[in-house]
Image 1 (cartoon, rainbow, N blue to C red):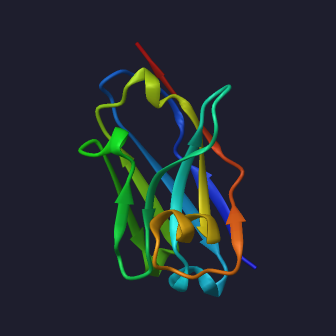
Image 2: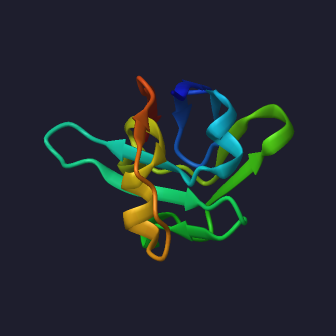
Length: 125
């Protein structure tokens, strides 16, 4: 069992930065593929960034050059550094561990799937 707790969301002006963190409990963290997703009102949840246990990353085209995903195995944490934020980045951001991100990244097998409760990011213009 893996539990995920997100933090770091908030309100920021366009052009600003935020850093989201996902703290994972459970010994499976180091072997799990991890990802950040977001869901804006009236829209489907979408992959923002994923990172495999080997460090391979995948970023959505809309955030390339602005967002960076990283993981600290010693701290059981996956972080999403978001720079040059835009109003279109406004959404609830969710942390995922396992199957959903594995499928999105390709070439990774994961049989379990865990989600955090989400953290709100609001970017004002």
